[in-house]
Length: 242
Image 1 (cartoon, rainbow, N blue to C red):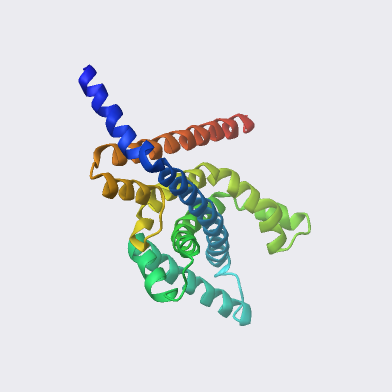
Image 2 (image 1 turned 90 degrees about the vertical axis):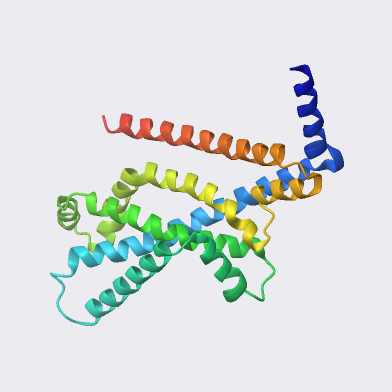
């Protein structure tokens, strides 16, 4: 047992202490959190816009008279459906590589490319989450908005969207956790995120066990922490409904 502990200690010093290799982990963690945070914000913006368009189309397509507004709504809804089909039907790794090697081939800002790729990917899933939240709000809420003198946009802004967000907030928080793990493929475009940091250390020390297990444990701790926060949020929302 003592010999095994000495070997682990020696491996730890080799992989993380020698040559300040722990800096790779710290820098990689910073990049991972930065990409995740801004990708979530971008995904929410895109997702909410797509969700509003699609839910507006589903609720009003039978009532709107034919005209310019209906044609525009049909076009926007069609574009939204194409976006959802393409993004949800292709792997995020392929989207990331297309974004880096084709669309932004002349850019050296790998963090920005990763944020755009993961944000656009997340937006497709956020759109369906928010749309389901909007569609779950009782139609009587629209009638209540009209009785208060609100038009459709005002009703969505002041009555429907706040209720929908309350319903889907735990699901959005879980999307953040999923996105945090999905960013581990950013190394495909040579972005030095947390996973890439472990790979760099492994390539320097030729000892794969501790770097990879250490990185896995860091992801596990982060996921457990955010899962705890989500659970706390869900309990608070349930208590506020009583």
